[in-house]
Image (cartoon, helix red, strand yellow):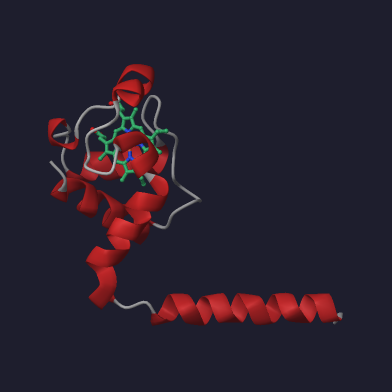
Length: 106
Ligand code: HEC
């Protein structure tokens, strides 16, 4: 094993430990963090998109999405119209946490 490979293994192990360590206690917090990093650019910090995004992508305020948990999860995971799929980018749990936070927005 080369030094480079070794450091990659160490890094992967560190990430695995860090992920295992994140418990359900900080779930709401992490939903917010995930939302801010991945969703806010289109949906806005308050769940209401900017006028530009609304026009460009057809994003509506959070309260206007009422398709239900299963459908919303499916839309975010697999994409819907101008919203690109998050499958492969975020885990199912991360998608659920982000949607949960999104639902708290008006
Ligand atoms: C590239 C811009 C963009 C990003 C980034 C984005 N969305 Fe969306 N989102 C949209 C658009 C556009 C729609 C409306 C799709 C439609 O109904 O035409 C939408 C719709 C939704 C809906 C309603 C789906 C439904 O079935 O009614 C939810 C919930 C949602 N987004 C959550 C999220 C979450 C959570 C994230 C981050 C993980 C996210 N979005 C990231 C653009 C985006």
